[in-house]
Amino acid sequence: MKIVVCVKQIQNPEIPSAQFRIDEQAKTLIPVSGLQPVLSPFDEQAVEAALRIRDSAGEDADVEIIIVTIASKASRAPIKAALALGADNAVLLSDSVFDGSGGYVTARNLAETIRTIGDVDLILAGRQAADGDAGVVGLGVAEILDIPAITFARDVQINDGVITVQRVLQDGIETVEADLPALVTISNELGKVRHASMRETMRAAKKPVEEWMPDDIGLDETQVGSSAMRYKLERLYVPVNDIECEFIGGDTPADIAATLAQHMREAKLI
Amino acid sequence: MTDNNNGVLVVVEVLESQPIDLGLEMLALARRLTDSMGGTVTAVAFGTGLESTGETLIAHGADQVLINDNSIFANFHAEAWLPDLSKMIAEVAPAIVLIGHSESGTDLAPRLAFRLDVDVATGCESIEIMNGRPHMTRSCFGGLAREVVTFTKTPALATVRSKSQQALPPMMERAGEIKHVDSILDENSMRTRVVNRETEKADGVKMESAKIVIGGGLGLGGPEGFKTLNEIAELVDGAVGASRAACDLDWCPRSYQIGLSGRTVAPELYIAVGISGASHHMAGCGNSKTIVSVNSDPNAEIFKSSRFGIVGNSQEIMPALAEEIRKLKA
Image (cartoon, rainbow over all chains, first blue to last red; front, side):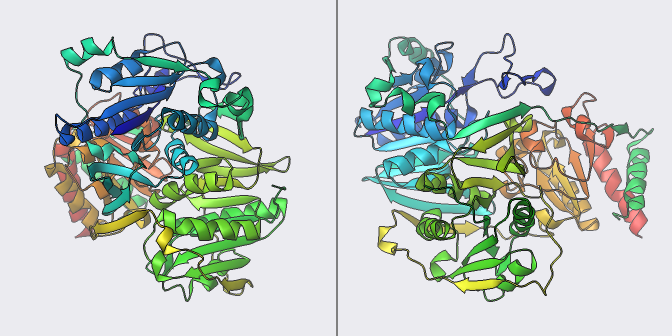
């Protein structure tokens, strides 16, 4: 079985808001020095979901996990991290023509990459990237490849070519099945991801990482990157926050609580 | 594709025969957009028991309502909706399509975008017409930034955040047309099968409509903290929510989660207890009228968004607050 996990490497989303800066002219995030790019957290959980499928398939099963990403040459650390977790190999669209393309074009590029890899049974992706927060690419890949897609998974099982997914609803859980090949987007409810073992980390350095160009996936330069974009980024900015916080003090918790309750009554909320 | 210009099409979700608030909020936005660019407002509703839905949607701003009343649509299922919705959009030819940024809408809109071969802006907070083109403002970077995007192809497809717009007061005398459409769905073509659906019955006041919402986070120290929050919520007819971190630790039901990948609330008062204020949480409560926060860390991010702040141990302050409210109510 061949599993492709689509991942995105992003600026560390845990960056404190005080250090978060936008270059409004260039309409980009200003990198914080010393902070390394990371795998988008939902994508890291998609890698974990793939590893769990391989674990439950047993030692003798032939499960290949391929990481696919659009990544600039600047940093390979997040890809190495995915390989160190246990993925087998990676395909990178690493030419600068692939950069800055947005969800629509990214989905097209990833779909063609997956078509070129061939015979892929399952595609996993995070529910959304933690920088754009759009949640478009995974579903887009499935639509382009014309395969079933199931979103917001917390559990993924495969039996005899049928995938069974528990998907998270606001007020419960829905169990959905589909025949493979299929695409599943993974939500945070999947739970904890494993740590890379020393053995896998050492092996990761030797795992194959291929770099592909538009030619390799049968696309010309007008079909990749910003030239193919369906949207225009008009503006990127940090919203102004003009709230002044008034601190409520007091000698005891009861004093503080009494003041707060009084405020609530004045606002006619009690 | 030629440039479509027939106004705005709004997909309104209906739950238990009632259009959800977000649907009505989007109708108000659609009204405002067509006022500035022309065209009509078309509302689309899928589901069962939609007898009175048409009138309600017209009263809230729709000129035309397309009703697809069919038992296949009783529960949301993206794959089932797509053929009918794509056909309706092709026939109406709107310039803009609005879908709620709900758990259903976020599942539906990206699929629809690729069927229509257009891009989509998810999680929009506002849409303005400038130079004749819709400019969509959406939150990104976990709520720390906003981006404004335009599209090169119509229809412009957007999912709209709950509570980012205000619904119009209903005018029962508004005129509009209601059309019933027959589904074109071929059920044999469905490739995803829903085999089970377990929902928890929400107890108490529904979070989205509560005037007071109390959110609990890691600072509560454990699941017991939520008991006090529920006690207070009951006293003030409020609802209890939580940060993602608290849900991930199973301190509370997952249905409590407020934030980017959870629910969106905008109550009169949001009390954030032991919540640091990570931007992905604020994305779900930032539009609250007043935020009061209780946190042991005086430098907690949450205070920057709060009107009132209390620095202290929530495990002492919240029981005391419950006591004070009981006294006031006695």
